[in-house]
Amino acid sequence: MMFKTTLDRFCWWLEQTDASQAIQSTAWVVPAVQTVHILAIATVLGAVLMLNLRLLGLAGVDQPLARQSQRYLPVIWWTLPVLLITGIVMIVGEPARSLKNPVFQLKMALLLAAMAVTALHRLRLARGHALPNGRGTALLIALPSLALWAAIVFAGRWIAYY
Amino acid sequence: MDGVLKWLEATALATEIRENEFLFPWVEALHVLAITLVVGSIAILDLRLIGFASLDRPVGRLARDILPCTWIAFAFAALTGTLLFSAKATDYAGNFFFRGKLVLLALAALNMVVFHAFTGRNMQHLSVGSPAAARIAGGLSLTIWVAVVAFGRWIGFTLH
Image 1 (cartoon, each protein chain N blue to C red):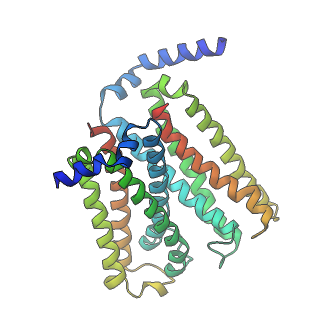
Image 2 (spheres, chains in turn brown, orange):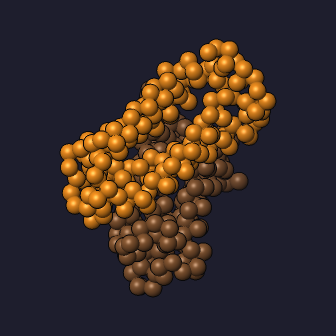
Image 3 (cartoon, chains in turn cyan, purple):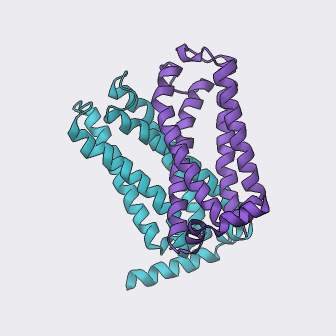
């Protein structure tokens, strides 16, 4: 209950800030920021796809897993700040509609899980026991990663409808 | 043309998508997922053609890894896009950004055909660097797909 009222007050305060008012009153800001956000998540998905298809042995099998990871892992980490910044702009523009939205909260939980799976892949790689096409790797990393990132995109679109 | 659009809107499927509270967002979410996969995958190949990334891999080999994903995702994007269109056919058909998006898709196809059939015919075996024809095709493709996403997003803000 306490948390709820604090969040309510925070949303109300954020909505009154100059930054929020500016975003709300300039029509092109939201679609422009959303476009960048979508392009950034597309970038992440492309990298996630190539990384996990390599783990599953379905793409890039002519080169070592470490090399494929070197190419695509940094793309994920470097694009996340872009998603964070554009995401924050959208939150500032409409605090209550995002922060208090269960779908948004679910999306953030999914994001943490996806980042944990990506970090696990990185850790296994560093320790040198990343199995190339093993079933364990597929079940532990590749499939959860693909499912989580797809769910994040889904949740992102659903924030608008909930 | 107007008659076709009206007929499409009146079909049972279009009516269901329009009136069912959950169907439109579901199809739309699938559409967004499909288009992010199209753009995210094609961008990897475009950046190789431009000479920005994946320079250690031959173009043909990278294309074989990526293009199947791109095409499957594109088929999904086209299917879900058609379903969304059918629900509000006359509105979409009159929307500037929707029309612009179709023109951009046609330009993307033209760029691809020109590169495959003429300017980049021998690129399958290109393993080092990226000649001007490849850089132009990659740059055009990347620019067009970025614009497709922007136009797509603007449809949602201008459709009434």
